[in-house]
Length: 352
Ligand code: CUA
Image 1 (tube, rainbow, N blue to C red):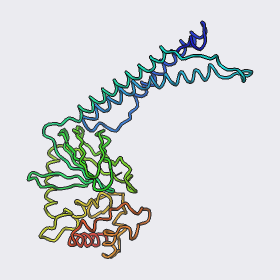
Image 2: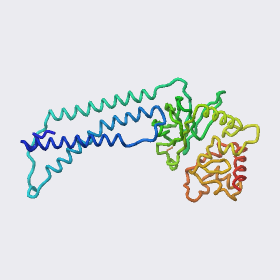
Image 3: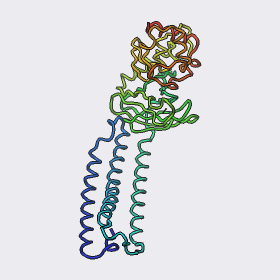
Image 4: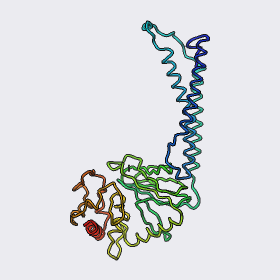
């Protein structure tokens, strides 16, 4: 590195060779380490392969740059350190080196343009529309996700958990009811903001059956860290069964918006659209959510008035160990009076 500028003669040449050797060995070790470390969760989508390859290319391109800079810095600190008796000495006055400056501007520029072009092509490729896409509408709100699907007849139904069939491309339309959230399934590698007032889009093709976390990746309020649900990647046949089941449950009146002719079913409301079970454990409904209080414990011996207040005005009394402002405050508006009544009666009955 411009050794002839700083010192002259055989000695500095041998130092330069040492520097180069150290830099090369450290680069090879750094790149090997960077590629060996298992940075990410399992590759849950076909997009994950491309994204992970982009990551590897970035490691290969950036580790040598980091090592080069660090080697030069550390070498200079050691070689040109001040020795006793040199306190008043100053280095020789030097002028810049035009050739060196052109080189250190051109190389990073080429590297940067190359990496940007490559990433752009990779991203465009994995975001391309596919044939036979499943459409899922994802709605974020403080502090939960709701996933909307259409059954065979075109009727919309919802789920507090994400279900997608393996190997079928999925097209998500992402929306928000309040503030900015960010829909992210790390195993799928793709993520996109949920912005109030506009629809954003995301495409993935699940390729590995399993259950993966769905995470909100945008600071959205007190409950941001608990805005987590799960994505279930299942075989197509299992997915079809699930759709039928959910659609039938929605038609029965489990939905928050519909008021059926028959008396609403409290348990269906609890496990339905509102996503109560996503946050609360309740043995009777088989839910295990841990974001909010365990209802078997918390509602034991409580009367209906207390349960109703907890639903429509969750801030009135906060259970020990939990924080105010996490549970949505709009359940009173979202439930028909008959539904609220059925839900309260159901909870009072099963937590007695
Ligand atoms: Cu929603 Cu963070």
